[in-house]
Image (spheres, rainbow, N blue to C red):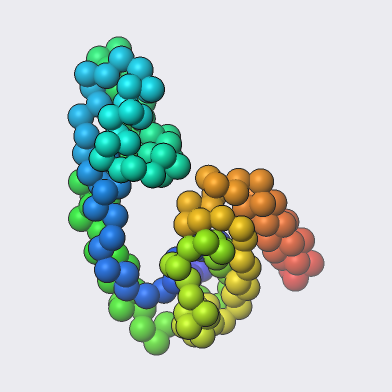
Length: 163
C-alpha cells in the first residue's frame, strides 16, 4: 500500500475468473523458430486462433534472433496463473488511494454487478468505459492513452498541492 501512490486497472474486476484463454496459450506455445517471415507465422497462427485481431496482438510478443523467431514471454508461467484466485487473500482489505478502472465497452470482464465489488476493494476508484474490446490498450490506443495520461496528470497535480 505505501509503495503505490495510485493505480490503474484495465478491464478486469477483483474476482475469480474461470480459465478461458486456451486458444491464446495454444498460439503462444507454437514453435515459430522455423518460419522465415512474420506473415508466414500469422497465417499459421490463424489456423489455431481464427481471430486475426487477437493473433496480431499476440504476435507483438515475437522477437527475431539470428537463430529464428521466438516468443519473448514466459508462456509456462502465464498459463500456470490461477485466474486471480489470490484476490481471496485480500478479503476485508482495501486500497485507499486513487484508482482508475478502465472498462472496455465490448468486453464482459467488468459487469455492472462488479461495480460494488470494485468500490468495496477500491473505495477511491473511478470507473470509466471506453469503446473497444478487452485488449483496449491495443484496439483503442489513442483514447486509452489519453485517459491514462489525464488520470496520472490530474493525480500528480492534486498530489503536489496536498503536501
